Image (cartoon, rainbow, N blue to C red; front, side):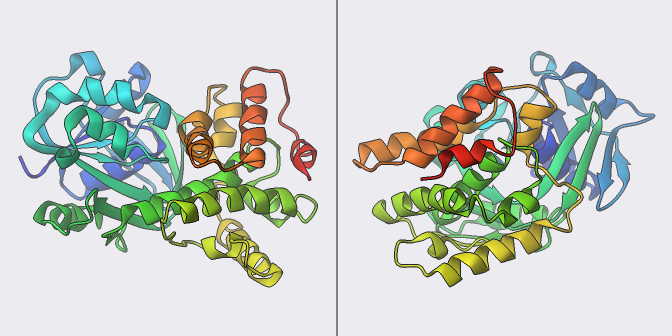
Length: 337
């Protein structure tokens, strides 16, 4: 049973991690709400096709939620942040009493999971690799990025060590942390820049390189970083993003350096646009803005902090979601102070 993993949500994140673990010989089962995707993954003549850094196929058991039977000690949750509560309630009957749910999501989803299954049965992860769901049974994995796993209480446990060994089949440099929040909040700050990119047509590298909207991008990240500072969460940097460059005391040179480093990290990638951009432009669906930046705005309000740029970006994303606004590169210029 220790070799069994249930991936709940076989999209870009869950599908990529699950494919690599299945290829390595772990007993991986997928659950997804897309019937065509499920059919392709379990088709013995096709399976889940991975393209990008490596091209390979894996055939694995795959089910719709109402088809599933059995129990698992390890369930990896990889749904959109705003679906966390519903998905956790759905998966709970399939979680062994001594098992855990690992959040492979963006945002601060661990607390929501813990409310359903218990904090002692919840683990968290921070991942920054780039992948896209392209079509049923096909995922494009374009680049490796930072990957971190941790217990909610910061303890170093046997199960965390076992998880780390298994996750190395996907990301050889995955690390264990005793302060998961430092990474999750760092990703929230970086994520604000990806939500900004999604309002236009330029790719991530080109958007981050724009000088005309540099004040907007700087203020977005700064509002998240400075809220974390108030909450006494020391942020971790990764893949060119340096949170300290967005503190009030930071110099222009520090900010310029981190933008240059982020551009350099993103420029070579075959995935040029964020998953948020694809949600809006390609898949025509609601984004995770409420489950990520909405949480930031709410927590800032509780602290009596103003986050006007974050709030304005949330409004802009909603306008694009509902068809009131087109994705256009001039959108961010409207947020200039």
